[in-house]
Length: 100
Length: 239
Image (cartoon, rainbow over all chains, first blue to last red; front, side, top):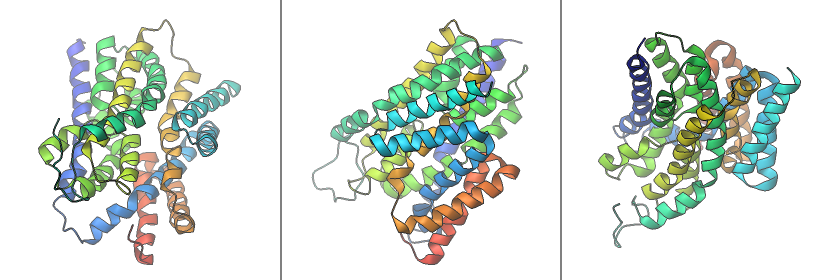
């Protein structure tokens, strides 16, 4: 197995990631400005993130629940995103250690 | 770097040096916030026979904690490219919606300048940009400035992690898995709209939870978020 196989796989995944980042932007440009689809896109972001948090907490169990809660509470208290992220990671790591 | 002209209306998108600096300052914490977890990812990459170059290239090109964490779990030799691509689509499908949302604010900006900038889009830079355009003129400079530190931190952190004399452990892998969730959780308060958010968010969370066992977190996000958004539309919300 040469490194080129690995590099090719990485490039393929990178290309797909970029296509996803630009695909929605380009597609939305084709929609009428006052369409229901555009209205949906305006309203969707927060709901998508709430659903992602809920689903990820379910998938990751107690480690994810504690990590997300600590990150969120730290953010609410300190108003600093970096503090929320770091505390969330630390809490998740501690739970992972305690659970063996 | 292009600059705006004085006669532009307040809603006209631009790319200004001032907004780039403002974004860079706002995004500076993500140099560390993305860099530290990327160190863990770099350590984890050592366990799947990635070389240093491939590890850093993966973070440079894919720049997605969710996609990289999932594809890490799928990695074998030879690389299962179809499975890796499918996993990338499943975990990053949200970028389609995020990009479509940005088009509403930056649609009048030159797409030949906007498309390269979208390469750097992250959950954090997207969410902070969508919040910024509610109070300021859409400025791609702010988006780019906001996105850059996270991308640099993520890529450099991966390389540093790979070079550290540490081996991946279940604890490191568990901590890495919580990263995308924590990134999004800390950004939620900025999206809160008071009582108006309660029901759509509750519906989104409930539908996301119901879908997660069958679809995984990436698609459950789309399914759950769509339920909450459709409710908002039926209720007559506009923004």
